[in-house]
Length: 183
Image (tube, rainbow, N blue to C red; front, side):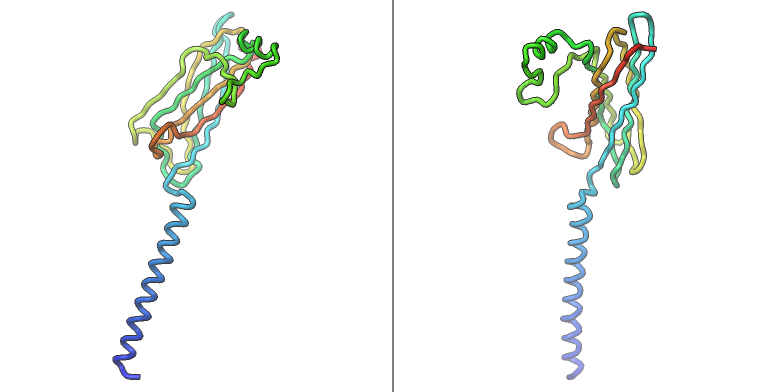
């Protein structure tokens, strides 16, 4: 075997090693960033709800929304909203439906549409103004004044995913909360 043949064989082996390295790198990138979706944020939402009597007929309901970044990429929060709906005392139109043996959940829905109490609280931020690092948590706070006769409410929060485009894609949480006596 002469030096020229050895050079040719070495070139061929180097080409195969380069191609193999590129394939392994591409496969690794695909597995890491596409399959495990590392480019998209993940969030966990929790409610901390408290109430206090404001007067004999009004109560303050305070909702703290904890947003935790449980993913590996930055979570940009651009909008959030929280609404309160009355469950107890049961509104007459829903109670009538239940008493007639009808399903109070409307066709195509999964939950009872309880009446909205007050105004939905909405927050908006420019992209990049409210961000949560991986492993970190942020809080949003919303206050609602309720009639003190209300015993149970449903608290719903939605946080929009700024990374996903095309529709209202995000994270939501619904919590039932009892106000047995505002104090």
